[in-house]
Length: 298
Image (cartoon, rainbow, N blue to C red; front, side, top):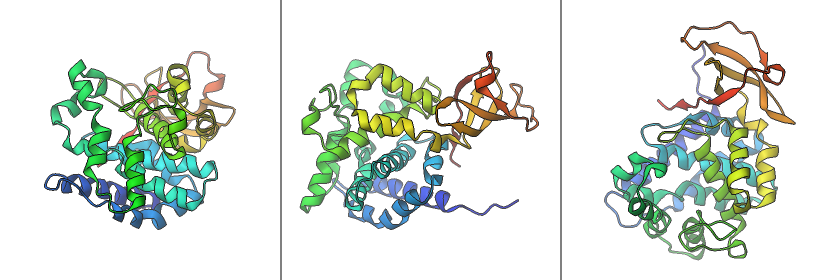
């Protein structure tokens, strides 16, 4: 068996190591220098332009022991993926990479008891405290030139929404940059398609439907359409649990119907390995995807 690490896996772990190193620095420093985020520009952006392997990596994997590490990496990848599809220039992409990697850096200062609960299980006072994390991230980075000051402001605003219902300041659309709008959507999308406390991971197209139905006016229509139109690039090769209990691998996705892909059963509900017969879910009345099964990192 070929155990060679792919370029996407190698890059993904490089980004994880970056987040871990910055988290460790914040244990002893009030502010940290994030300018070395730019060191990853030549590694990440060309790979994302070349193919979808890194996007699929972000869709499949997460770190169940420390979700905020893999979350930051996945959000960065999804954010850049959207911006590339929207034809933004390299300077924009480079800035977006730095914002994405560091947008949640201040969570390293959050009490462990709050992080373990998960946002959905927090009490009123705990939720208020959690919503200060954009300010914590902003205050945790050094801003020794105008570009880093701009990046800091984007980090501060990554939970703002165009309908004015975000936090921490409740800013509305005209006060938000394109970078913030793209990052905000990628941030919530990533959270939905990976497991969280008391919630399974949503299958990506169903995650998009959840955003449309519950928070559609929070996000820019063009960015929403870009993500939905390109979802099929991100989910081939990922795993799902079917309504029968079977674990299956997605082998083909139809762009006009991404919620009913062709799948290959891998394990039965009892954990028995299955043969490789493919199933077209669009032709199955009594069989559907229940949720995604992302793969925990080693």
